[in-house]
Amino acid sequence: MIPLRDANPTRRTPVVTLAIIALCAAAFGMELLVMAQGGALALDELFLERGSVPAELVAALTGGGLPFEAVLDVFTSMFLHAGWLHLLGNLLFLWIFGINVEGRLGHVRFLLVYLVGGVAANAAQVLVDPTSEIPMIGASGAISAVLGAYLVLFPRARIQSLVFLGFFYQLIAVPAVIVLGFWFLLQVADGIGALGTTTGMDGGVAFFAHIGGFVAGALLALPFRLRGARVG
Image (cartoon, rainbow, N blue to C red; front, side, top):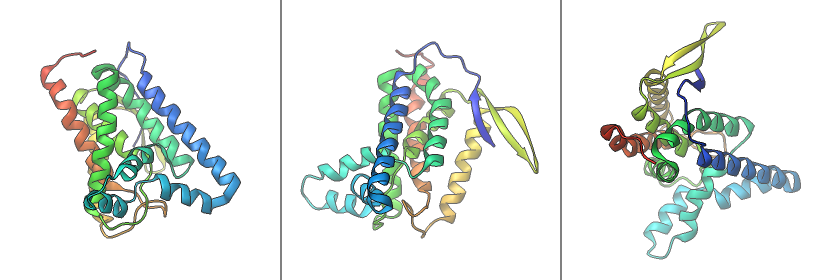
């Protein structure tokens, strides 16, 4: 099941969503430049320097000093991606679900959900594998927070999705609670199956980052669902 668009209209220009997309695209352009100039080794060095390495973050936070660089890497890692599919898949999900969450919460609150969700995603993966020396990169954890917020705010919204039925496929409008609920359960199942494996630039997926971000986004959006208010 691949979501393509939602049926929710929005009257607010999603300036934060567009800015995040632009920043991720610019960061990927920088990666391509680094790759062109120095090859795969130079790109790996960039990921090591600006990705979030769990072992380094834990050492910085427990070392008694000022872990500024390690904490900064948590945020810079949200804009790096491991390839075209990684980038385009993330930006597709951000565009589909982000514009309505931003419209509901407002620009500033949406940005806070995105960033706080990204931090929570990083923390969840670090808790699962605190000794990993492989950098985590990608906007997936922060975007997972947007998905969690969307599920809380618009559970009955229809998501136009490409549904595969064996060798055939069909476009079906599926309720968000089914699309995102299935996605979340898949992350949990894959996360349990991936316990003990490596994640990061070697091709692994940080499933617990997705889980942590999703839960954080849902919790952050819950007060607005309970209030039933549209905020500016």
